[in-house]
Length: 411
Image (cartoon, rainbow, N blue to C red; front, side, top):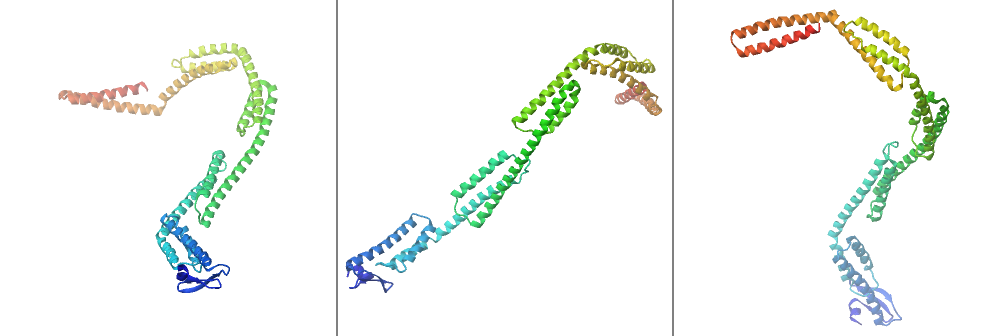
């Protein structure tokens, strides 16, 4: 027998092959058609294949490959080394594989911790995406900018897909929970978007018909000419209240509506020009009345001034309308004269009011008493040759005399 045969097994005359494993002989095969040497070579080759796998496993440990993958391979090798049909030192192989398993304890712990961090990071990234989508979905459907928000939703979905492609495997329950939130937010946003634009389309159709009705009404007013200006303004207010639509039809309706308004205002301009010519004579009459009014002096004789302005007002109304550009200037000049008369009248009334007279007399009496007292204080200061007291008394006396002059002037 060969050394291998003698050390780890044997082959009998019938071609049966036995291995000695852990001190126990075990039948591993039968090769009656082979020679003993061929049988030994075959089963030794099988052992060498297993030994090569153990060697590769040890090299992976030295190369610091994924410890979980190494551990999984070691577990499989231990199973393969349980009752292998091969000739060799299986006890030594098992020890080497067990040694590999033992060396992985720390690496497996580190790998587990790293995986936990990666899982937490991946879940957090998905959480951010879901939360952002929920924030967009919670916006007021009537105020949201669907163009920018839609682009943001697309960006979030792309980010989610990138995470799916490049991320590690995640706990299904937690990953599904976040996905359902994200999916629900996207569906809500899409629903709001569809409803908003459906309502906008419906409003646009209604607005289109409403504007067409306003165009028809405006065009029917053109025949009335200048008299239709106020009615057209009402139609314009109604037009502005309708929703805007970026449609060619809307532009066409506005062009027709505006053309009708231009025709009405053109008619008004012609009428105003004709009126200005007709009212020129009235202007001359009112200018003459203004010259007469502006000569009134209410300070000389208030009653006469009031009678004069009353007469002028009566003639003013009979004088008729004036050209448009002269209406305000002429009216303002007449109002200025009326205001001057009212002011004089109010001032006279104030001075003749008993309560005002009483207040004035009371204040005048108080000032006269204070002035008498200050004059005495001034004389005393002069007698004492006290310059500081003299200056103080003189200043106070001058102030009271000034106040008295104001009271007397307004009484």
